[in-house]
Amino acid sequence: MMNKKILIGIGIFVVIIAMLVGIYFIYVYKPSIQAKKQLTGRFSEFKIKYDEKKAQGYDVTEAEEFAKKAKQAFDRKDYKKANKLLDKAFKALERAIPETVKEEAKERLSSVEVASFYLRVTDGMRSIDDVINLLKETKTDFLFLGWLRDRPYPESCLDLPPEQASICEEYGLSYEHFRDAVNKIKREKPDLIFTGGVALEFLYKKERNPMTGEIFEQEETWEMALDPSKWGIDMTKEEFQCGFAKTVGWISPEGKCPNVYDPKKVPAYFPDITNPKFQELFLSWAKKQIDCGVDAIWIDMLFSQAVMLAKITGNPSHPAVKESFDAACEIVNEIHSYGYSKGKYIYVGSWAGFVRFPYPPPNLDFVTLTPSSKEVYSMELDEDKWDTMVKEIREKLGDIPIFAFIDFGTETSPMVFFSQKLSPDKQKDFLRKMDTFFQGKGINFIYPLHGGWMGNNAKILSLGRYKVYDSLASEFQTYETIKELAQEKSKIKVKNE
Image (cartoon, rainbow, N blue to C red):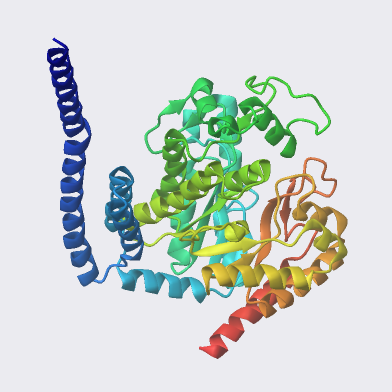
């Protein structure tokens, strides 16, 4: 009787083992075999397309790197990661650009001599014809921030209520104004590189996709706002957004945090660059400018999310930092891809602050730097600091064009000190000093022809009215100095040619 029970027990055990083996085969082993087989087929498909693109003279470096990483994951039997990396490899192949097109575009950018800042060409301070004359007189071949998307703009001023439409018309704040201005400038100066800009840091509570016309209400934009706690960081969404609002001056630094969800308290949020919906919205702002005719897109604070999260966590390798950095790099790739889909190479630039991150660099075409407010006020540039910055950029990005301009945007920005603290004569002297200094460092100084916020508290206004800098305004009168410096650069270029 005992032996019979033992045999029955052994039989049950064998059946259970057989069932477990069956379950493992059905739910684990078999799918693993299928995943491996599927991936092997995808690798073969990639190789065929890769070889075709490479034979046609396309730059397939990015796709090749993703494929290598996918193969490494495959060898580790991490088939899920291998699939994701292969997706990126295929996508990189789709946006690959012919080597000749890329080389010609980069050669054109590297040959820029005279760069001028003019924000924005439609602002109504002078006519487009007058703007063009200034660009011609200064021999400008790189127009920086001829337009900046820093808030929602309508397709036409007629789309707005009468009172808003009047302001829109006066300051040229529609895509219709922008497109017409770019077309006119390009007719007169076809070789000019027109650079538009997108301020990544401002996600207004009501937003619009200018490509589709889709409107996003506050509930939707709040969902796109950055929330550090989603990575397990000990900081709430409200705390972060309040801190950002204080940084940009919407809330007093010493004040208590109001309900940041209240549109009367804070007009915009800092977005989450890793949010797919925001990525699509942000790209629509860049794509619209490309459709309007720009040759380059400069992105303000592109890597600021990675920088801020690195500071909060104290760890530049934290997943939140890495994901934010990767998302910023992908934004650059998507803009390049869209430009090429339109038959042209679109340059993409941003601040150079990302160079200290321990990750492969983004595929930027140029980077920007600014003298500090302290340097502007003292009229002394810190040579050691600039040597270090240039060295770090060269080590990370090679021989990429570097531009420097007088930054603006807050009450303590360099432009505030330049316009409000320096007399016109000192401004002229410092312009000459910066131009000589930057040329010696291999940096192209962008002349402040027009534009740049001088602060809410500005006392010295352009033409007694505008809080944006203007080199021709009687209050500053730096245009002749800029023209002299620019024309001298142009002469040197012609002589060298």
